[in-house]
Image 1 (tube, rainbow, N blue to C red):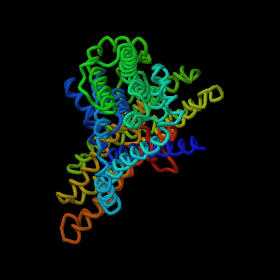
Image 2 (spheres, one colour; image 1 turned 120 degrees about the vertical axis):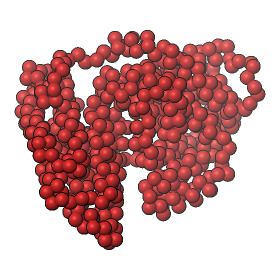
Image 3 (cartoon, one colour; image 1 turned 180 degrees about the vertical axis):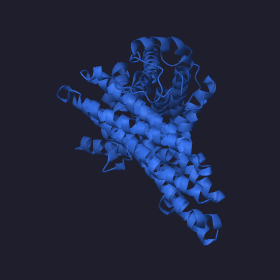
Image 4 (cartoon, rainbow, N blue to C red; image 1 turned 30 degrees about the horizontal axis):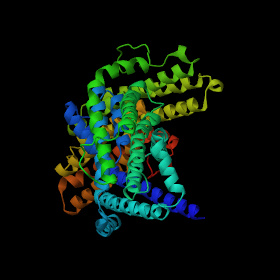
Amino acid sequence: MQILIFLLHLSGAVLLLLFAVRMVRTGIERAFGPRLHRAIGRPRGTITMMASGLLMAMVLQSSAAVTLLVAGFAGTGGLTFASGLALVLGGDLGSALLIMLLSFPLQELVPALLAIGGLLFLKSQTRNWKQVGRILVGVALILIALRYLREAVEPVRDSAILPALAGYFERDFVTAFLTGAALAFVMHSSVATILMTVTVVGIGALPLAAGISLVLGANLGSAVIPVWLTRRAVPVVRRIPLANLILRGIAALIAATAIDRFGLPTALPPMGDDAMLVAVHIGFNTLVLTLILLAKPLNTALLRLVPDVQAPHVAAPLHRSHLDPGSTDTPVRALACLRREVIRMADVLSEMLAPVMDLYQKYDRDQARALTAEDQVLNTALDDIRLFATELPHHAMQKSEKRELRALVDYAIALEAAGDLLVKRLLPLAQEKSDQGISFSKEGFAELSTIYARLCQNLETASSVLISNDLVGARQLLEEKTEMARLERKTRKEHLKRLSAGVPESFASSDVHIETAYTLKEMHSWIVTVAHPILLREGQLLDSRLADDVPSG
């Protein structure tokens, strides 16, 4: 009975810790997600990329999240292999430094964190401040969970079972290593796994040697998470997570074997077992950073191990279809052609969007006719995709292939609908503004330009997600839908204020302004639908709402 009570308390403490870690990460993603995406895409030197990865992992509380973001950008050609690997290795060290911070005695801060965080989350009307409140409450819950974990383990520390298990782990480092890897993978959080291990070692319920094996194993398990989540992605997306797994996994196994055989260096300064465990974790990930020197040969090896899918490529204009009628007998090839065709549609839509705000400032009939002609390209592409899809051998396709087919056809429909909105709504509104000599107020045009820029940016992100099946990018897209709705509501509110203040330009442009903002938001709603099948597949979309529990590592 005592064991059952212990297991119940232990499970409660671990699940609270997992919930708290994910709560903090959710708040950070919702408040600062777009900035993090933009930061990853900027090319910089190796050291700077490592530092950026370190900071991002500390902010996101997950090295796996950084790896997934980097993999997504690599899939679009936005990052080289070496730069991406530098970001990921920096993220591994950042996750270790975060564990050091959370292992400090911060229990006295819990009441203040709960009070301030709770007030911000419940009372703030600003989205970012509300998420800051969520983050503070999450940090408080992490500290509470760690204290609860200590209290749960303390009563059985001197029982027969726990010392026997601890002794077995101390004698058999391989079992402890594999257990740490399994825990990190199953919990989808190396941060939670290592914090739990540090806490148990700190109260003397687990020997330091066993704790080191568990922590090094958790490093392996954390590297497996992004490899597993990108297993269906294109080769260029999978290479960086695989490289991280190879470097971090082999290094962890070598380190565990060396420490088991030779022990820790005797020159280390005296410190408690929990502090020593954290120091070993940080030291290990610091040494792994030096493996960036192997980036070039590792990239060469992975290009052979995971080669790009070879497909006939012709330097063709956007208006040439990628659908190959000869591939319909082979579902894998046919789906690859279909995906390329949908990507082409996204590129055509991006090209159509580029001059829209210029047309609002100075209407050009020739350019408007050219955009209408490009919309016909989208219409033709959708018709061809529908016909192509009907010719596939559905009876011979696997369920996953059928799901992919439906998702691609659905997104082709969404892109065509967005193109129709541009041609049938935005162009007539731009023409009406020109024909009637209407001018936007300076503030009104700035608000519309902000919404338009967001739309263009997220269309680019959607194209990346379409290529890479990036889960983090998919979540970010759906969160951007909420942000776009907020921007549209804000411009309506500000427009009404200008009407009340008697701004003459606002009176004249009222209908055009409101309808333009609404149409941009509606186009955005179609564009972000690329995220839906990815989130549904991973269990991150429930009842048409974005789930809060996202894997962390």
